[in-house]
Amino acid sequence: MGQMIFTIIGAILACIGVICIYDARTITKKMFSFGDQNEGAMGLKIFGFLFAVAGALVVFFNIG
Image 1 (cartoon, helix red, strand yellow):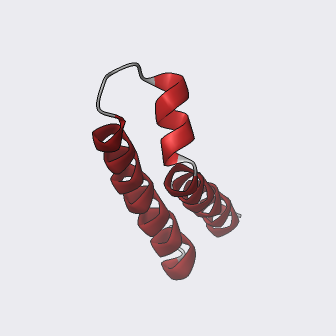
Image 2: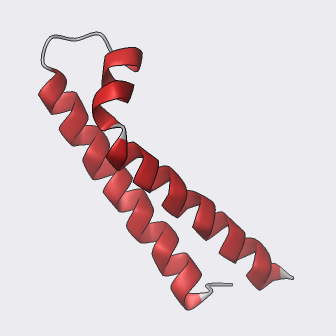
């Protein structure tokens, strides 16, 4: 039961990360209002990459 919950949480984290990478520019335009959108998009892509890797590792190794 516990491993299945961790697998679902890992899959959700990985999906959030992929969505952040894919839609970084549009999310930056909607959520933040500062001049340089390239820095915001780059930061959001890095954040998404870290979330995707963490979620994939949780799913792969079934930590729990």
